[in-house]
Length: 312
Ligand SMILES: Cc1cc2nc3c(=O)[nH]c(=O)nc-3n(C[C@H](O)[C@H](O)[C@H](O)COP(=O)(O)OP(=O)(O)OC[C@H]3O[C@@H](n4cnc5c(N)ncnc54)[C@H](O)[C@@H]3O)c2cc1C
Image (cartoon, rainbow, N blue to C red; front, top):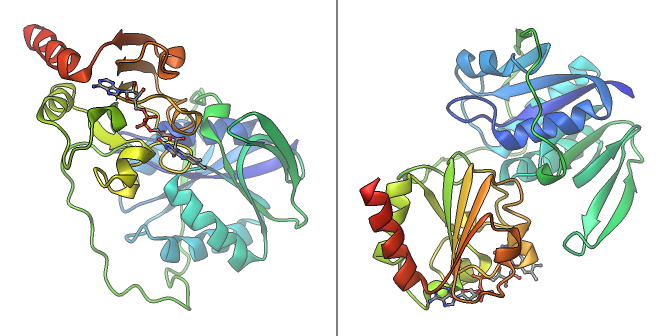
């Protein structure tokens, strides 16, 4: 086992994102200790992370862009002399880690489902039907891990300490951020929501999410996302795609409506708690992984579900 692994954490409003807790398990599986790296303005989130780490490096960064964060990670790795950093495979880490690796002259290993000492590991290929073994040829390695391959890490018995990072915030000297336009935030986001409603091609060729589904989402307090089919059709923007080439999510409950359950979609929901599926085809593969399944058309079943919830 190596000595220490840095873990890049993504935070929700209440603490460490469950996907990052899975990355922590990956780090613990290969090293004696793990140090958390928390990005963000407020100290409170770093305090929450201390439940899981003996030491947390808090970087009070304002702009959470890859251009800003990648050089900071480089500086942290150079200063701490740690040679391994791990993060959950998410859109953010996919953006940041390869840049940081390039700036450091380090290796980048993506989406490992097993980490071994000395920058080695295994990655699933062919939607989980096979594995490739991979090995870093450089002494420093940045790794994203497939969250569904690791359990959610448990807190430590004693909380750790926060180290405030005081390095330079100059960012990547070859890039200037001209403007940041944040997307308007309506309702919970896919990455933080405890309930997610996944909409598939079964809702038909529609221009907007049908009203009964929006009503269901509102009643459940759910974020809404789609399969690749519904994103390709223009029903959702690409960043709301759930799955292997979209977002990997870990809500407590995932409700799939008109989603067949293709392996590439399932790759994005493996970490979900309860999986509920509504599909008219009783042989749809989604029912193989669903905890609760209703066979029938969404036009009939979704309004029934809403009226059941109304009565609660
Ligand atoms: C390299 C690669 C990467 C991919 N990445 C992703 C990814 O990240 N995410 C992803 O989602 N897909 C991905 N895909 C695509 C994936 O293979 C499937 O094509 C896609 O997930 C299917 O989407 P769907 O379930 O919406 O549509 P379909 O497979 O067409 O399923 C529609 C379902 O709706 C049901 N249905 C129809 N009418 C009704 C009704 N009235 N009421 C109830 N049910 C109804 C049908 O029975 C069916 O089960 C990828 C594919 C490749 C090759």
